[in-house]
Amino acid sequence: IQTEQGMLAPDLFVEHLDALPIARTVYRGRLTGKFATDVREGRFDVTEGVVCKGGETGSVWMVKIKTNSYMERLKQAFAADWESHWE
Image (cartoon, rainbow, N blue to C red; front, side, top):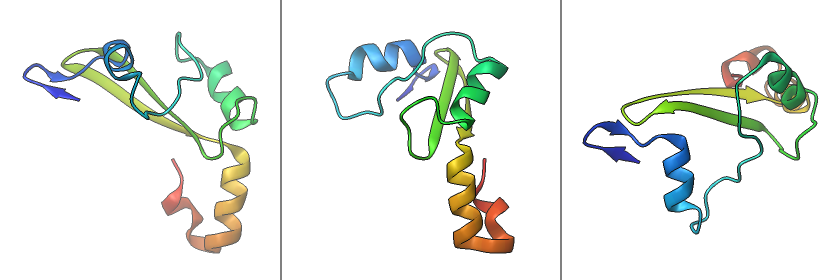
């Protein structure tokens, strides 16, 4: 959600919109290499991957982490062009 100050901080987004059909939260905490590895190795019940968001209202950052199984499906579907559909 965009505010006059910029994008709404992730914790406020979840707090205010939790009753709506938004993506479920699979993890709250620091973005670490272990978390990225756990996502890639399929330790969370996600089909494609996750979008991580952090920061405060007005200075929100985002990053995608995809699962290895999703990468394999991309390779099968798009052959040599699979990387254009990756993170």
